[in-house]
Length: 283
Image 1 (cartoon, rainbow, N blue to C red):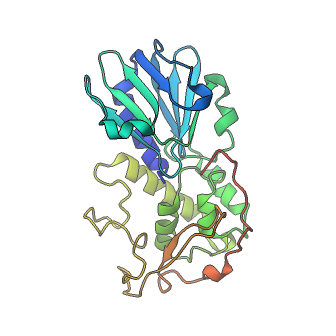
Image 2: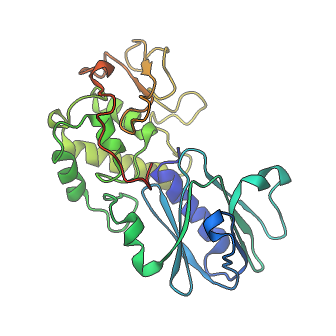
């Protein structure tokens, strides 16, 4: 699933193609909006909050989209088209006069809202370190308010801090030296927020640093534990363990960890069905 840094980078990519331009095509290929056209509107710009993308148009209208697990955005240059085999997956097509085209593929959420009412769809989200209104103190307070919540599930809860997904939950737990199932009461929330915010900003803003957690930007060497189940820990040599997600539990996704470098509770402490439900529009 794309994480907050992914969506932020998508927003900047889409701005380069569309911002300040008038649409000659604006198709929304979802049933509830199939007859709606955005042609003739000016793209004012793109904003992100956590994993949510906001495309703002003239006339006080915003396109709210979410990629969930399989969605993606692709762009083409002037006069170019996306290869035909992608077209069945296109949910949003935005073509600017004299410029390029943006295609939203397999987007899980596509909805139009009044720009003045964006808070109705994203207002529940926690602070996002990639936004100008980032509030580290609020994020710390949110984590501290759930002392019994386990570390990785707390990081995945977009109401606490927006933008962290499963990759970051796994990698940050390793960097903190805690089992992913450590209660938040035993975690230094200030250190967690400082590390998480620095990691997201570095990933989104520094060239060639996208989701590199080891500092080594080479294939197969960029992560500490994610995707390394059964392989030796890069730090101590202990076999990295991995457990699969619990069905129907947004709190407990596929998790990788080093039992030696990350002491604490194991996956047997996961409570099936005991997760705190997230709003239906998130992921």
